[in-house]
Amino acid sequence: MQQSDIKNKNNSADISSAEKSTENSASLELRNVCRGFGDEWSREEVISDFSLSINPGELTVLVGPSGCGKTTLVNMLAGFDKPDTGQVLLNEKLITGPGMDRMVVFQETALMPWLTAYQNVVFGPKIRNDLPGRELKKKADYLFEKVGLVEFKDKYPIQLSGGMQRRAELARAMINDPLVMIMDEPFRGLDAMSRELMQEFFVRLFEENRRTNIFVTSEIDEAIFLADRLIVLSNRPTSVRKIIDIKLPRPRELNVLSSTEAYKYKRDAMELLHEEALKNFKRSTPKADS
Ligand SMILES: Nc1ncnc2c1ncn2[C@@H]1O[C@H](COP(=O)(O)OP(=O)(O)OP(=O)(O)O)[C@@H](O)[C@H]1O
Ligand SMILES: [Mg+2]
Image (cartoon, rainbow, N blue to C red; front, side, top):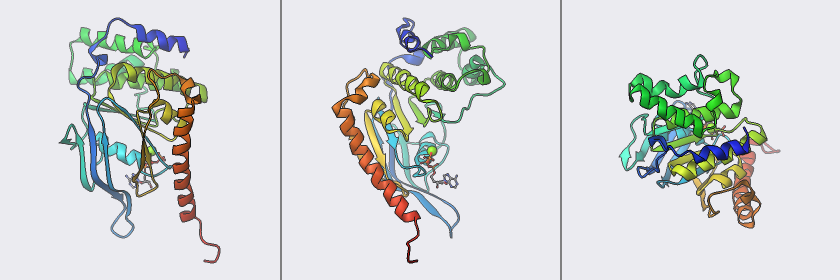
């Protein structure tokens, strides 16, 4: 993917409903949420009395130690899983299951390998019979332009690079006009260059539509580059260690990461993550005399 490619895609005059400014942007809330796994005797509490408000129209990034429960939180926000106790709310209404108002993009590709990129993108609205054929095509064409995949829409997932697959997945999520996008380490596994390009591409999309976004990552630079608010999580049972408001200017360019402000945010977050990693290390290392 060329950088110029990404920028050109942002100039499209035909703004479909998929990309209208999201006056419908939503708030999310986790209220005193607990979630554990295992049976009575070997139960482990992963999330314990966890509370967090996610503001409408913001890009909220969750960063935390590996295995601390980020995907568990994502699954509850998406409605794929339920808390044992506590509540998960969308616009102050209880989330009771998955819904078209929340779209999730995971690290693992969820594209159907037997369908082309285009067929994957229109699959959901087509089986739901959401839109007349012509409108659906117009919307899909617009989104393919937006994600820079016009020339690749008839390719099968296996013929696309990792970055292209992720962009096809973004289009597939966006065609449903969700109120919230939930991204669980979507760029993990991409090579460094593709990852940077995807970050720039994604930040542009967000800055245009200002849809409520929850983005999980373990990459601190990625977190700071994207975030309006950075939520630093602790080890299991997960709690919020700190909320850092990232007041870097938008539109953001990658070189913002070399600014003094970005460096301060990074140091702040790294210190906390380091402390959490040390605690985890001590917990899992047997004492010499035992
Ligand atoms: N369905 C499940 N059944 C049993 N244990 C689970 C289940 N889902 C998650 N866990 C456990 O909960 C803990 C947190 O898992 P989770 O995948 O949420 O962490 P994570 O922060 O997303 O990790 P990573 O950084 O590796 O993506 C892990 O110990 C995991 O084994
Ligand atoms: Mg995870």
